[in-house]
Length: 516
Image 1 (cartoon, one colour):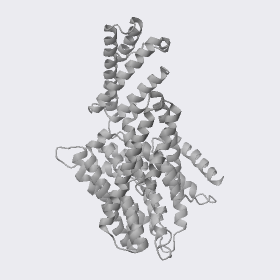
Image 2 (cartoon, rainbow, N blue to C red):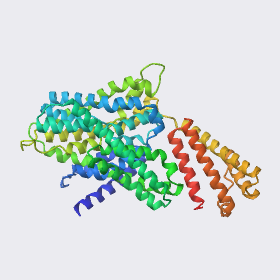
Image 3 (cartoon, rainbow, N blue to C red):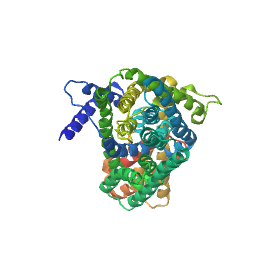
């Protein structure tokens, strides 16, 4: 009952914070961390202890899956080279930089400093996606930041396992061939399992048209991908991400409008609840961890600030040479793109879960030296990036000049709507010319589409939808418009955000017609 009460309090807190965040136009994750930190500092509030298994198994899979489904596979193909460089090279570079600095300024043993570097080496997909939703970044920049955070898990996880299992616990030496093999097993194995599960789920979805069953399948899929991959000793995170990307790409072919609307509505609630709880927990954890610090570690705030600066500097140096691939600037490097990509790459729940999973004792049964300081520094860096970078990210994007203006998005969406309506009108005229549809139904559909092209009030009101022939014709028109929408997207004529907005409108229109 105590755990249930805590969750309910966190949900109420998150709902209140989210309401104020929208009114103040501030990122909810940053405010949730501050709210959790404030609650934890209230005298008499019990210390919160969350097992890393709870975060890894209960919270992460659906959040990762939702983020992966939002990822544009089309845009990912255009930036896969810089994503690969960041997911591997930047992770190694960040881990090394943090490790060396931690040895110099924190007094941690080299092995535990390497553990800390591995924990903080990668950006967090949950935090990146939650902060990035409210920004109007160009497609390539948004996909680069989001894809990097989704695919760098295998690299950082290998580093973490090596640091804990070999250097910190067993006191052994680093075996590079074994580490490379482990990296291939984690990333490659997770990718294979995720792709296989996506194929199986796709076959299942093609054989059902029940929105309730499809919603259940959508909720179970991320957990199945994670558990199967972890059971096979591969990366559960990579498995969830691959499954989400593949199923997100094929979602419009596997499900109908009713199911998509219901699944999206359910997932919006699930994501809100889980994100709210997890970001509040990050703030709630820090004071309790600080109280567990041994004597002589009072400089941890300055140490955490220095490590944050090191991570940002390493990220700038690695992203700057990649800006040509993200946003070509006539052969020049772009500090603006590097700055935005760097500032958008925050740490979050995954580093915290990794740090909490560090063993309490080494191979000899003695307490692992520096574990408490590693936990505090990890949490402090996570909190600082979520608060400082999160609250200032919108300003950084605005000053960079990379943000898409609302007028640009509105014009693109208006042009795409006109193209869909012209495609629907051509189909109606073709059917009318062949006399394969009644004149009354064709005239109603024609008047409605012409009114939309003229940006006037829609002429096909709900009363017309009582005609069975007219409803059938409108369903055919929507099918044609769906095909035109995906043609525009496939030919890079519209952005992924525009595609999703128009797909949602078409789904709502199709659902309003009822079942065939």
